[in-house]
Amino acid sequence: MAIRDFELYHGALLTKLVRSDRPITIRMVETDTNECWSVYTIDDDVTIYTKSSGHGDFCEKDKSVKWTFTFQPRHLHDLRRLSEQNDVRLALVCANHRLPLRVPFTFDDPRKAWEMWLGRENALRRKRTGICFLEADEWRRCLDLPAGGTQSITVELAKGRGFLVNGHLRVPQNRLDTWQVREPPQFGRLVCSGS
Image (cartoon, rainbow, N blue to C red; front, side, top):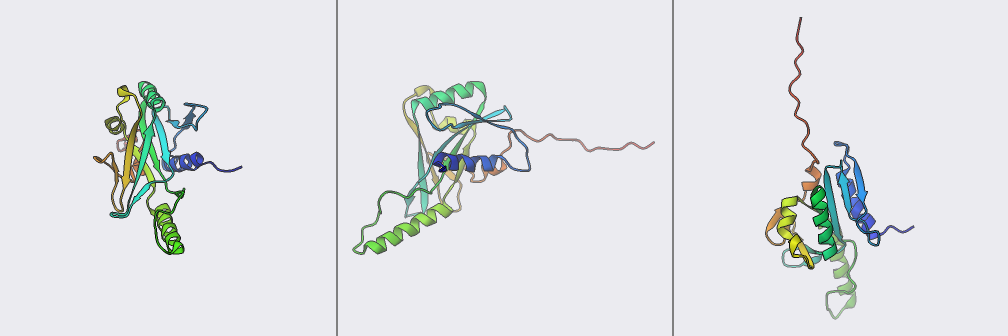
């Protein structure tokens, strides 16, 4: 049985969420059985809505990669409905494993064009990927739920920088690695009383 793209993307997200240092309960929520499922609840406290893109647009000038995530009215409806029930985070999986259909270079030597294209694609797959994890107040600044209509979020990643969302919002690349569903309990220092 073949592994579908959405399974790879969701696997990356789940791997980041399920770490040995913090046990959690994850439940997949069916949003639309005709499409790949995109919602998880974590410990029944937080909902994570995920979207993914398998190939970003490469900018030769600064070696950055840009992904565009499209939200159809049904996606916005899901986000609105889920937000009424729980605290919602948005996980944008920015991947680079699908090759574009055409070689973007024009040279007299097709072999040279192919080698340049393949080299660039291999570099993209290794270096410019990640999960842009947006808190509720952040994704609400990027999407206008009441407006409806098709909307999009653009995520850019340059070497050595965090994600740049819609050209104005900086998100650390490691946010999901350090994110916790809830703050760990603060225990006071135990003191044994002597007799």
